[in-house]
Length: 306
Image (cartoon, rainbow, N blue to C red; front, side, top):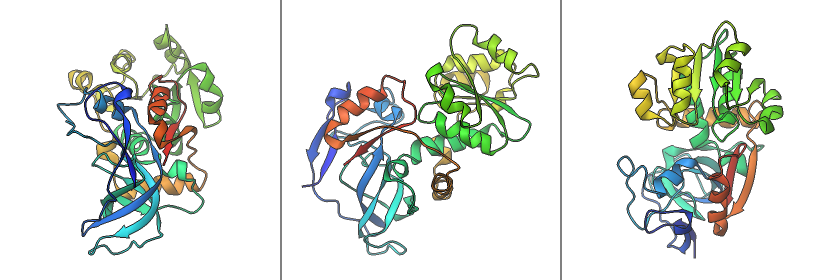
């Protein structure tokens, strides 16, 4: 029988288990995809631990997973444009992609370029759409100097490259272990830690014009301290602090569309966007996958391979 990740209560990653489930049957406007790759994301940890209950309450038993890439296995009666055997990537809003098979609306899929690996294709939605929206929110372009916190993480690797493609100068805040990769992708690495504000000022005496926070509220405060205008600060983490200072909070919800997914897939397939795959895990090692993710020292994406 098909398998899917489930959890029956809020808790640590040990509440996750693999369940045998019925084969999904597509609704008239849905497509069933045999999943070949599905990334994991920090937001899934927050949902599973109950921290986002007010915004995204779970109904138990709950599935999980948004990113997906795979092969169409069945289509609903009103679906046109997809047929069995098509290779696709996309997303599920119903927390269901960490599974062997998933049913999703046909309008949440785009064609997977043949040259794109399954692992990268299955990593594009959450992190890629978040980065795309954040870059758009700060209006980055030629002449801008944009600082990015957690610049080598799952969202960060997208963000620094999308900023560079816009012509912005990128100051990438990350551990020294990631500085070589960041330099190779047209970003200027800056180590986090004590005296970060002074080191950023020294790097850009003329001032930083925009700031994208991918880590936490201390970086929203840092952006304000550095004199960045609130409307050019975007955080995908710290909604409460953003509201207090007038910063933006654009992320995955604002960036998710088939147009954005197709553009990210085109850039990745063409070599203009490199997405490092930190690790892959089989479905039954999902707890191990989240153990690695929750260390918060991953460069790029961790992917489940059903």
